[in-house]
Structures are given as C-alpha cells and as structure tokens.
Length: 140
Image 1 (cartoon, helix red, strand yellow):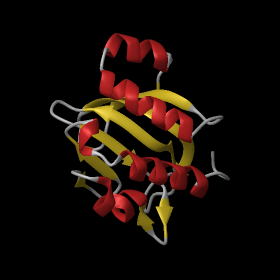
Image 2 (cartoon, rainbow, N blue to C red; image 1 turned 180 degrees about the horizontal axis):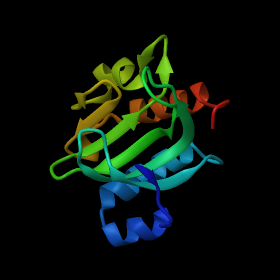
Image 3 (cartoon, one colour; image 1 turned 180 degrees about the vertical axis):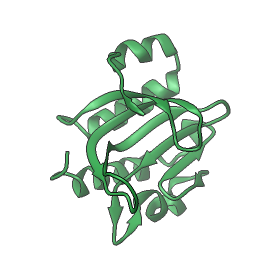
C-alpha cells in the first residue's frame, strides 16, 4: 500500500459514511499535528483497501526492508469497520492491551474489527488513541 494523492476530507465526503466520519474526527483529534492521509492498494492478505492513516511510523520487518506505515489506520470493510493500531507497549500491540475494555470487538495482532461505532466504549477508544499517540510521538 502507498499514500494516495486524494485528500482525506474529499474521500470521506464521497464515502458518505457517518461512522467513518465520526471515527475520523476522534482519530484526527488524537493525532493533531501529525499526518493524516489515505493509503490505497493491496493490503496484506491480498485484498484491495483504502485506509485512512494517522501518524507516521517505520516498522522493522524480520525479513526484508523496513516499511513506512501509519500509527493507526481506519477502514470500512464489507461488513465491519477496522482499526489497525501499530503502537506497541511492553512488546504488545495496543489493540491487544485495550481489547477487553473496548466493547464488542474482534481482535487480531494489531487490529480491531467491530460492527459499528456503537459497539465501542468511546472513552476507552479515546484513551487508547492518546496512548498510541504518546508512544509514537518521537516517530511521527
């Protein structure tokens, strides 16, 4: 995936998805002053994706070159929303650290899937985003 030349606000207007817009406002506030851009292309696993990324991060890979990426990403899937949280605390992705408190979420290594914004505990989400921003302040 690579950053697109499309303005995020324009993309959100065309998406006409109130939940994406609501989550974008929370994420943009948590990462104020840091990058906010649309990433497009083939995601790991082979699916074509459009992800709004917040903050910049360089991820080391065990094999191959380092990858420029986002700290937190937001995407609409066919049947759910996804948050990709690439911040790490004590060698654990924050998605795993906060999963039990976030509400009705499905947890991957660094991802959270949920049916709607209503499934999330908003206060815990804001806490997790603030922690992700804090942990990555030097890299973004």
